[in-house]
Length: 156
Image (cartoon, rainbow, N blue to C red):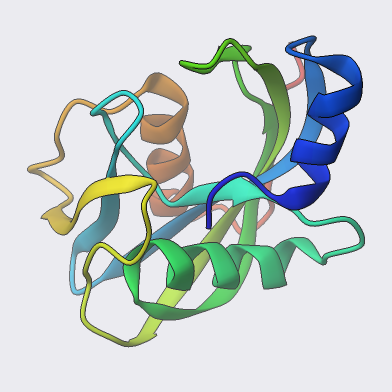
């Protein structure tokens, strides 16, 4: 799914001014591999991620985003952490920053494939063969691999 309608409606009122939005980032690990997408807007490999719709539960948004972007069906297994993203400026000039709810998920079924217009490629990568990832996406994977049961929170 491209930009949600509620964001488009907001943008008609505020233009490209910064928006503070809730988002999810999802770490799906299956058989020692992480599911990644290569974004169409900047060509970078990242974890599946997206914006929560108004009133949407974060775990449901995580499952929806993974399926929309990759065709993979997953089940959220735990909260990995909550943090903020770096401010983003999109090619059209829109600015946003996200409260990032980072979820760990278990693969259920589905063939990984490009399933939307937001990504150029989708692939499983061995945990020891990950491409260059943005730092906060790499951090999310490290959180998923940490045996700590509690979520990670940035405190300083």
